[in-house]
Image (tube, rainbow, N blue to C red; front, side):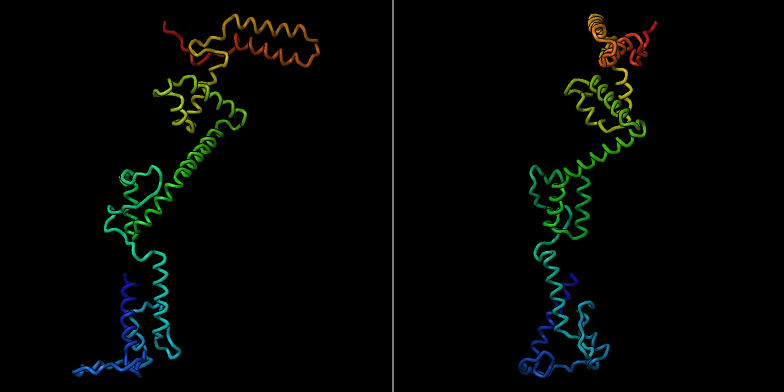
Amino acid sequence: MRLKNSFSRFMGVFLMAEAAPEGTPGGGPAPVPAPAPAPAPAPAPAPGSVLGNVAGSDFIPEKYRTNKEDGTLDLEASSRKVAEAYKHLETRFGSGDAPPKTAEEYAPKVEVEGFNWEEFKADESTQSFLKGAHAKGLTNDQVSFVIGEYMRVAPELVGGAAQLTSQDCTATLKTLWPDDQVMSGNLKSSYRAAQAFAGESGKPGNFEALMSKYGNDPDFIAFTANIGKEIREDSQINGGGVVNDGDFEVKTSELRKQLQDLPAHDPKRPSIQQQLNAMYDSRYNKPASRLVTNPQK
């Protein structure tokens, strides 16, 4: 506003200078004599003096003033600087749009699919933003641009935050399971436990809800990993018992038969023997599960 006032004052003085009589600064035809003599003007400061420069230039900002070689104000050059600055300002901020009287009167036009201004405006963070925007003098067009850009990149920001959370979770779990292979095994155990004990789809505690809420929670993952270790792929959750005896006998018999048929130095024997040993260990030598509690006596 101060710049506009200064510009208006300058234009008034400039036009008056253009209409001055010949022989006076600004040139031009002599004016028609007034019917009555005007009061004698106050004596002007001496030309070229410090006060003389100030008297006719106080309406021009210091940074736009240009002096002639004799030290006096170059009105034309100074006015050109002011005009250029005003034009640049008008280009940046526009000449017609102005901020609303209050922050509540903002009504930006945001062309984003599904965007509801009333809902967006009701949010406390939006209210805070609008008050700040009004204090800074932002117009409706500028607020429209800011909100539109935010809505455009918001999904990317949310995705980036989720990725960062995943990285933080992994870093925390690395302190518990530094070895990559151990980490992978525990993550599988955690996933298996969550999947096994999750509720029905669409109900509280369902698998999708657990993954969405706790999928990047290192405490939850470490906890369920311990549970998952107690769940063997060949075990049932409800009793902790191994597969039925018939299946066990059939599988072990097949493995023993293969060992009998293979030569003593056949390279396949160690792998088959390992499978057979693992089945017996799983059935007879596995540690007591923490999932099974002692019945009350």
